[in-house]
Image (cartoon, rainbow, N blue to C red):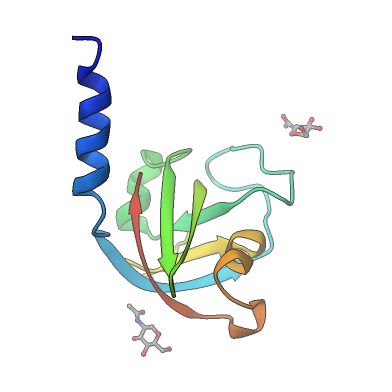
Length: 114
Ligand SMILES: *[C@@H]1O[C@H](CO)[C@@H](O)[C@H](O)[C@H]1NC(C)=O
Ligand SMILES: *[C@@H]1O[C@H](CO)[C@@H](O)[C@H](O)[C@H]1NC(C)=O
């Protein structure tokens, strides 16, 4: 019985290996987000989701893994991106930099909750 959660985690990891979401990612300078996550640390990887995935704040503090070009980064949901259509996300500059140069500004990513 002790091992059940481990198997469940493993299984969900396998099942989640295909990302559920795809869209464009842009970046922003991190600021105090709508989630009240203390993001004063500029090194933190943060992500803002569009209204449908932000889900009225239910996604706050959740972790999202974003994949792009063979690279991936895990970021904490800290804000609403009011102008993001479903699938599109806004990353803190630090998180975006893990995937691409900031000068690219907009990249096409896939992502999922982890
Ligand atoms: C992503 O960006 C491209 C290029 O700007 C645009 O054509 C496309 O419609 C965008 N996709 C979404 C889901 O916003
Ligand atoms: C946020 O975190 C920073 C660094 O850990 C800390 O100095 C600051 O007091 C915190 N702010 C709030 C509102 O908790």
